[in-house]
Length: 393
Image (cartoon, rainbow, N blue to C red; front, side, top):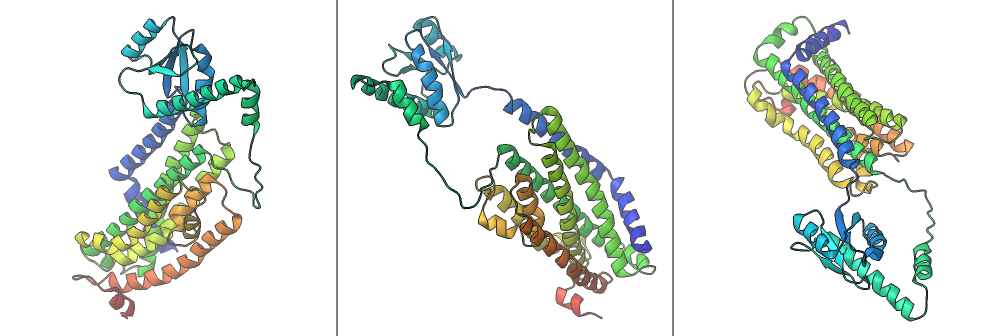
């Protein structure tokens, strides 16, 4: 183990001092902090989607318009103008998106050129509500009582299993966690592969293997680069969560935010060890940097596939059965499970299955990768086939 640690120290010092590592870490920290600040600025601006002017005669439509817009997911603010002429001037200048005119018994609107589709939907709902109220009045009823009764009507739903509710911040946090894991595995894994080929092509590996065993060299590289990536992950994740909590962009409980960071680190470590071992074994079969891409691409596709599936499916369907199943498989768990954990609602048994699968797979990968690495790392020239690397003495 002392030999493994010596190799690990060498990797840590070499990578931590590199400009690429320092710059990438600073850039990632700046990005996540900037995202937190922008989220606060955009989310806390309080601006409405549209601003509609009303005159004294149409002021009675102000509250119903806001309610109608809210019912279809829009936000409309109303401004009272002194008269119709002033309102038309404000529409023309762009201060108002539209102006309600007439006597308030019908919905008539003035716009600069075209009526925005979303605003038009809100106004159509309003027109229907106005016509409905007038029909009630003509029949001798009270529109307020009828509207109250309609608003109070609801469907009674009985769930056999208690559903988990997801809020927007949980979804965003989950996607950010997936992106960080994806980038870390992508960058760190390729660093392992490039480091192996660099030593092999420069014949440094022959000197190293005269003093230590192949598995010790491979393990040292994985441990060293894993620690470097771990520090980067903690710095980036911690900076993002801290910025989010300090700016108020994150309103979820602090314990939930810290839990996300902890699980992010756990899944990074599990995922990195598993993928780094496979990257090291694959890279040992080639002798040129130009050939690295060809041997690591199949492995990268698993990382990319998990990430793409997560960011494309989870925002629209957080409880997707497909993602739930894939997140428990070792090849997809490092990218998908952190997203689901950040969103919340993951049953304990699924976490146990996912972590347990990684714990079982990693020792098997150690044995497999160590054998391939040992048999291929000293063979230069043409690419070594996996079958030959496995069978070599």
